Length: 316
Image (cartoon, rainbow, N blue to C red; front, side, top):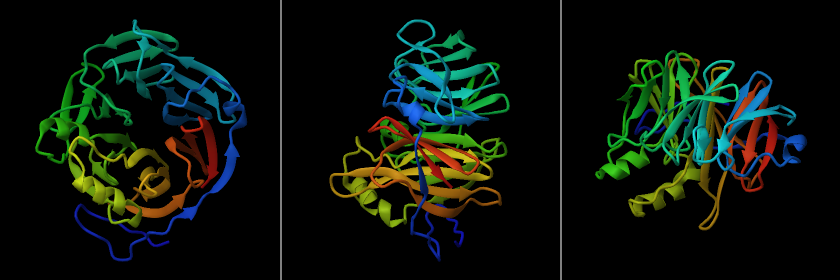
């Protein structure tokens, strides 16, 4: 399949718009037959042979084998120290330490093994979007009136801002609509918008490199047209999740099925090996499912289906 690339505001010649189905390998039965997961799972991540995921309703990060055997968890539900009411973000800092964020209580916590070592209170509101670590810094998006990306130093807890932002005239709307997932391949940072099928590439110093805009794809046409005439207080959720591995970004996108139904079962594979991001291939997962998060290990893709609360596996 021919590759394509796009810069902001430009369309491509030789556009790729056909989605090819991935081979469905079934549910992870041992995981789905248990009751330790709710239907609010975010940030599915693979660490070696282990799957990790944040369960917002239970206030925990769960760890299990790839065949679904529970290995353990950290965190707990509640309002006390080391407890969460809206856990949606986490990132592993080393073999024993996780950084976890409660987007409801606006607090951050460092967990070592099963113990909360310290908390940071009264942060600006965060969202469900991914966060990443690169060197001594964490990169994420939290509410700021400039709509920029955030960099937090792990040593000092200081936060600085960088990156592009779209101006929506009203600062509150600008702060909310510039939500982005932030991931890294170890060399660059990638920021995927929530309200548009747009991925930005930055250097580790925060300098803009490229914008890949997939708004031209027919599956997004209706949802973008409706958003253009909608109230400024509403917006679509297009960029569901993005996962970096092996020189590629696996971009899970939402779209409009018809006037009443939406789906999040389309996958855009973006290669990052060259100087420019390029779309390598387009895929459909099992039609009609509503996936909230995904992760990739080798030639296998794992995706959590929130409407049924089950984990599915595909062959890439």
